[in-house]
Length: 170
Image (cartoon, rainbow, N blue to C red; front, side, top):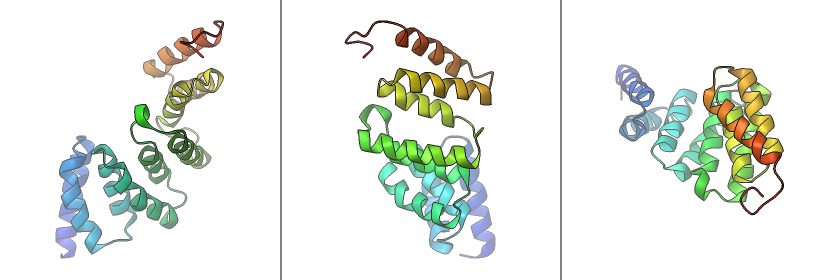
């Protein structure tokens, strides 16, 4: 692959990713990875494409390598958290813990990184940790006061944490 081909394929893959077409971007990014296996943009985009395509297990080693090469890159850590978590409804406690640790690293790097607090809140809702969920959604609103989803979930969690425990909310 020439440098020109590499740049063209990266541009095309990035465009596909911005359209949410991670599966379509994977072949392009895998070729780029073969050409530059330690390029942080290739690793981040390939890992992100795997996450979008639901191929979380494949994303993990790619993104872990990216964190070694760029430990201060919040986007890499955010993608790694998503890869660790997989689908929230099927995520084990261990996968949730790994995701939370990666999200905490994102916050250390950039406390206002988009959607991190929101995703943390979702994990805490799944775990029925109402106080932690409320705090996470409140932080999401501090980072983005116009996040209506975070506001709605924070308000619902507020109601749940003020109700007496029942099998539905505990």
